[in-house]
Length: 219
Figure 1 (cartoon, rainbow, N blue to C red):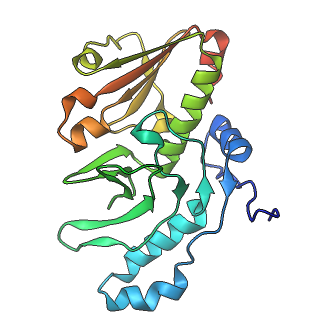
Figure 2 (cartoon, rainbow, N blue to C red):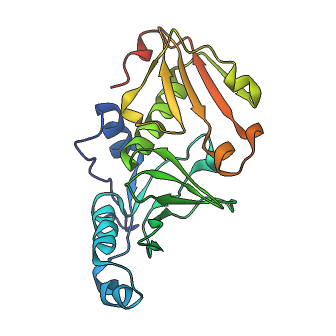
């Protein structure tokens, strides 16, 4: 640990090389919640042991990692850090993925299937796992650095995007959100906030152009 109580996190091998570099260069590992001292108390609250195990596994892999902000969702969680699971056997179980950087109408959560998303009046999965969220952050950082032109579009114009000549970027594990790659262009499409809040005007896409060879240097 440094004198500030932080150090560089070790990137999981399941991430792409790009995301591993991003995590290790730009991430910080800070103190995190230790689940085990809370296990008996959470069990008394009726939280199943298997759900506590999910939180413990998240903490071991991601807990305490601080990353640069996302270009959307007001930056995303400041620090990846879990807390008490909530839900039921009937509806499924969620747990927090970390506090937002600013006050938001929704929270960042890990869903019943391990997906990363946002929760307000409804649950909306953004990526199939936390790996996908981190991959998306890394790709946004990469694209913003190398692109010669960035265009932002919102609302109905997002649905008019012609993506036929593009291929999805699989490592972001996109569900509601996704990334698309062309010859020298990357496109990020953010639909999660629009779906979660029933606010179609929140649909947003960022188009990164003139990336040249750096468009393919994304794995």
